[in-house]
Length: 433
Image (cartoon, rainbow, N blue to C red; front, side, top):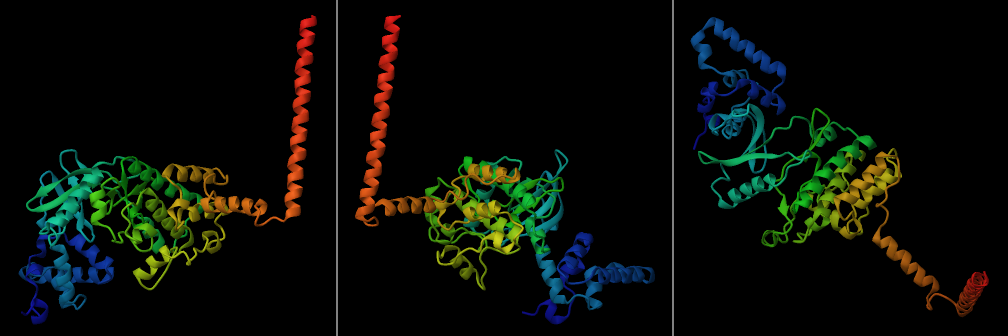
């Protein structure tokens, strides 16, 4: 079947574009690199010129038509823009809210900036994609995300406000947070200074502590999900992959599935284990912190599967962050390496321990928990056995050690006798008095 792009006709939706917010459309065109700001302004100026010459002609053409005629945009590009806008604000009506703008689109939903009329505040509304709203499983997942978000209330987490369904559109309302993400800074090649990075990571750790206390794991900690607010705050966003640790049925349903983002995913998530806990989030936060401070991800690769394999493979060693960026202190390097231990038994066991070490670093002290690696302690204990055990010590050495022990015992016995005589003497003197 022929499309408008094939026939050269102006798309029907483009002719009805007056219902759209052209300012937002212009921003979208520029942001995607489809046209420069100068080209957009030139097309707008041309439309204004047409309006002075023929008002009817100007009314019959909108900005997209002008841009197509000027060969700034192709009809295919216009069709894609209109298709995306089809998930947009002009079709969405939620009682009690006024849609202002489209903020972004993810794998499951579109996020809009809106005003909550009753209290006159700006909020963010996530709407399940129409293409997924026909599937009961996706609806269940979407509702579960809203329910999980409602369990959390913390200064470092984007908080849930409302949820529901309107006109067949499933939505939930969240706190509106304005500010760039860590990813926005990384994309601009920013390397975070140590104290700034620690402050941000500690705020995320506080959010993880709150979630952990409520039996939740985030499962998708990454630079894109950490927002830096204009007032210097830190907000953890996107609970789309969050899970209740105690929900065994849920865990079994996802058994064997690698759920997470490849560059930041924990080894146990790669393996699809069902018993993951807060230590998985600590690993992902460590990978995020590594990227923030070195400008590199912990493990790279040409494909997602190659990257995930490196997270799991014990033969692939992590390059210490303080080797990549020599400005990083050895204590900071130790903390990040502890967070990124492939064996979760060697990581921080909970956010409290991690927060303690972050506080030490901010005070200029060495970390208290990092470095106390169970493997190292086990090796040390094994070393003691090897040094004094029968398989590693000669007979002469054993005799020497035995002599030392006997001498020590004799000294202890002599001291005990002296102490006993002293006590007896004191008792006699008391009696004489």
